[in-house]
Length: 114
Image 1 (cartoon, rainbow, N blue to C red):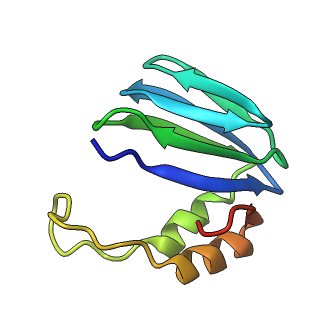
Image 2 (spheres, rainbow, N blue to C red):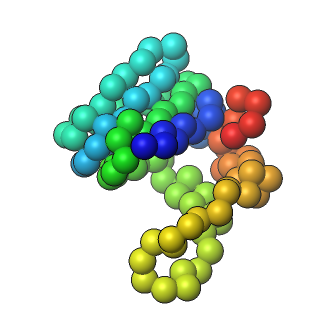
């Protein structure tokens, strides 16, 4: 299984809450490591540097930003689907596009390369 880790970052304008439905994740927020399993809720306050990774191949979670607004980042990062279903071989993320969109919504990557 290939773990996916999100580079350290913080949100300047909103709290980020994860509600884990399936799989397992590990969060590192403010120097504290938190392991989450289905049914767990993890809230990261705005301004707190954090990162997270998937610990299982399959992962489902609900994500909430408070107050609302950061969801527009995901709209900016989305491309129209060519068909219903997951792409068989997704390409690598466009890092420059990701950073530019994040900055527009007050998300700052503090690691070397997101």
